[in-house]
Image (cartoon, rainbow, N blue to C red; front, top):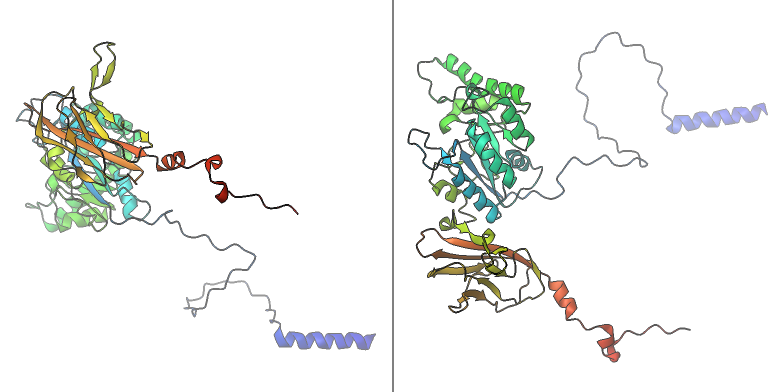
Amino acid sequence: MLLFRQVLSILALLACLAGCEKIPAPEEPVTSVPEAVEAPLEAEPAPPADLPPPPEPDTPDEAVDTTSKVAVLGYHKFSASPEISRKQLPTTIFIEKFREQMQTLADNEIPVIGMGDFLAWRRGEKNIPPFSVIITIDDGYVSTYDLAFPILKEFDFPFTVYPYTNFFGGAGKTLSKDEVLEMVAAGGEIGSHGISHGFLNRQGRRSDEIHAAFLKKEATDSRRILKEKTGQDPVTFSYPYGAYDDRVIAACVDAGYAAMVTVKGRKVSWETDLKEMGRYIVHGEDDRAFAWALSSRLAIGLVGASNLLKETTKDKVTGEEKPLVDLFPANGSTIKERQPTISANLSLIGNIDLDTLSMSVSGLGKVGAQYDEATKFYSYTPLQRFRLPDYRVLVQFVREGEKKPSILRWKFSVDAIANYLEHTPKPSEQDDSVAISEPAKN
């Protein structure tokens, strides 16, 4: 028995010498920190087979489309009076003009996104529509809250307000803290417009050191003050008067802003330098900047056009409200016909300059619609069957005595599957020779 145990011990020792690791002796407690020594690079060990793989880094569910374009609109002060005094800022806009512009965005289904959505897209975290609009309002006039905010809420449009801190929380014409908090709670965002609203690129008699300190205060302190008062960190900066230079940019970068906006009317994209984001500043009654902003989606002549889709009239017999224009297919409807006659009953519109009457259909462009003088119907029947699921129609014209065009813009869907099934023979109608028989039973 003793001999047998000795043999087992010898075999175990030989096996250990061949492949077992040496068991280290207990280490002495560390009493001092050794000097840093650069360790040799080693391959990272593979995880054990029974453990799940490490989680993938956070990535968007779909690839980010880097071809999107954004037009940033810039507003300042709003007026309840159509007679805008020349003593007011030239950027003051009549509130009904502002409503018309917001209605234009809604009628033409132009998406409005928040500045935060845009920045998330630029970080590669989400997608935004192929074309969209951002609404910004500078300075912090109380008319932003009293006049513009109700309209923005009505349309459910996000927006960014850029107050300058010397003009914030005062009395009379300025936004109060509670008003800003209410707008933030409703989806508004806050950006910084500096402290003094001065020309930041003008050094004047200040020394380089004093000017640098001035710029730092304008950029850094304004962000801190707004964050303390509103609870929202303003991560974007609007250059007062659109005036800036390399020193102003550097001060904003040092203050940690993610983007800075200018007054240069140009669209922004994936390649745009976030330190110089263009904006279209809307001046008073002038629609041109608004039109230029939408030029990739809406013809210049149609900006401010009156969309008659929502206008109504009273039935002479029943007295009930009914649409001013009957459309087929009806707006928002789904039809089965794949070759429908598209028509608009213009009998209640009044006299029309027929030279200005036209119809466009998505996927087809301008089509050869015909106007019936007797019935006042304006109609078009496509030569080919519709193959897309959704279509949009635009009818435009100028009524006699008016300068601006009127439009009818609506959409409908085609249920091609329902149409196909409706014309598919039922099993009982099929030829017996092609019927599928049951397998023979053994």
